[in-house]
Length: 623
Ligand code: HEM
Image (cartoon, rainbow, N blue to C red):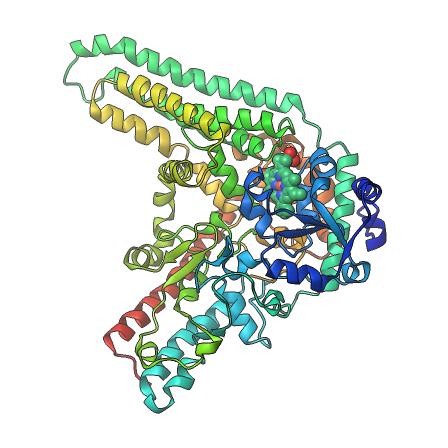
């Protein structure tokens, strides 16, 4: 049974580096207010068990990416740091970055500061005036609560519906009452903010808005401490130990699928000669063999990707370098994708799960939006406090949903004509779009390697991997096929067969809550709220590749895949029950039904918004 521990007991775990730090140099303390002042000046300071890390110079070297750290500036990242790093990294490497300890009294009642990246700042500058509009909206109206989650964990949508309503009413009011224009324009869709364009920031800007209803900061701290205790129990139970038999089975399966794909291709080549004698038959024997080969190659890729995922979390050997070599072999050399891109994207997803503005795994405009926030945030006019009066020109502008700013992509995910079309039909197009998901992975991978990736030896290895992939797959395999129609059919089938993977990936989050419940929500609460499991018998585990025990994976991402079932049953489910956190588990069919229902609901809201936008543009809105 899970035991609840108080702060003092939990704080006694992992104190070896504390001791080292205190013996190595005099322990300096910093108050919360001093911490805030230094962050406001632009320093990258993160808290871990009272220790304050200064990470400005480490950012560019961090294997987990810059954003992973930036989202925790000014916050207590204890749970996340211990979930994502080996003990060796924590005790040896991290201790080098400690510059002080937080004042004890401030630590006991610590209220997180808002990380500047979540206010729209990157590299010392304001990225975009629409960054984190939700937080600004909340800040301007402290009495209102953020969206709440209903008992089944999905967003109740009341906040979203209020936003839709605001937009419709706000637009109508603006048009109809010329005398009251300025006031009306500032009610529904205007935020008055005071944000400088670069650092230093006013310290007050880093103070978070009040917690929304349903978030009790004290309780969240207790959940956090209980999670830390649970983590110790998981380690003691040996669940971080790799089960080689599990991966031996995986390897046998990969080998079988790869060999079958190769055997059909070889048979097709042998049949080519015979086929020339039977010209004119509808489906030549060689073509059938090639298409069967493409089918098995797709299955091979589908299965293999789960191991790339494990390696991306250092979940196989627990050595970052070795797992990166395994991941690069699978993803780049065999699959033509970038493991570097995947890790960059996926690490952020794990840390800010289901946050519309920050989590790239739910940002799929123009094809999908799982909340109207994707459409609504951009319709809000943000004006700075020293320019509080709207100009005539601004008042005359029609209220138009513009889309949402993404802190990951650093661009506006626009609500433009293509997204207006796709989003209104997203529930009908879902499986069709997903069928071609692997092509999107190529685009993301190559875009990342070309523009964003660090130019280091891992990057060079990835380029070699991709060149190898296109040589064996593009030139060797597709090039060996007799005609263009057969080549295209091979390409399409081998890619479409992997598409259940994309459905499995989004299934865990698309139907879950994507409300922003603020910075006081604990890591464990957030992961359990935003993530769902898929129920299946143990013998089918290989089909889902561990992704179906997603809640346990999100809470303990480095636990090897073959231990997830035990982790879930012995530790995670009882933990959620003890703390009254709703645990979400559905069958594959029901989970898909929930995803489609979510997409349909947003499609309906988008339909209304599109009508409003059109009417507003034509000047047809009346009181
Ligand atoms: C003192 C500062 C830090 C150091 C020295 C550091 C170092 C590392 C290292 C060496 C790895 C590779 C995995 C390993 O060997 O354990 C890693 C991965 C990672 N780090 Fe950090 N890190 C720091 C701070 C942070 C912070 C504040 C966060 C966010 C809470 C973070 C999030 C991650 C993530 C998400 C990964 C990827 C691991 C995975 O995907 O499972 N790191 N970091």
